[in-house]
Length: 147
Image (tube, rainbow, N blue to C red; front, side):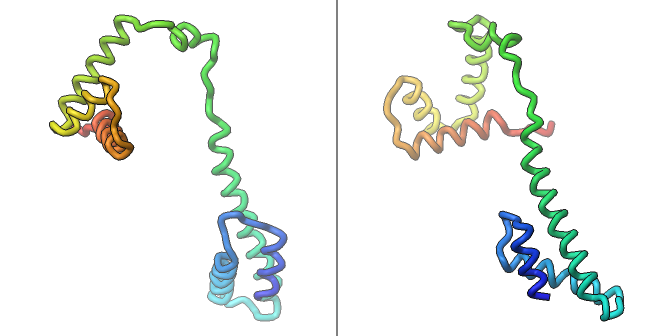
C-alpha cells in the first residue's frame, strides 16, 4: 500500500500534513477495508479509491476553512463616514469612555490601577507592564457574565 500512498501524496498535497499523516490515514482506511471482509483480490483497487476520496475530502475541508473568511460582510464606507472620522469626541462617546474607564479601574488591583494612571499620564511603562495591563483590561472588558 505504500506505493499507492506515495503516489497519491504527490498528486494531492495537503499543506497541514506530513508524510506520517498520509501513512496513518492509509492504515486507517486499510483497517476499515479489512474489517469489512472484502475479498483480497480487489483490496488494492478499493484501497486506492477510498484513500483518494479521503484525501480529496480533506483537501475540500481545508479549502472550506479558508473560504470561511471570504464571506465577511464589510462596512459600507458611505454609511459609516459620519462616525469613522468624526474629528472630535461627542458627549455620548465621552460618556461611554468614562463609564468604561471607571469599570476597568474598579476591576483592577491597586498595582494595576497605578499602572493605568501612569499610562494615561503618558509615562513610559516597560513592555511587560504594558502587556500585563492590557491583558487585565481585556479580561475585565471581555469577561462574560453568566448572570
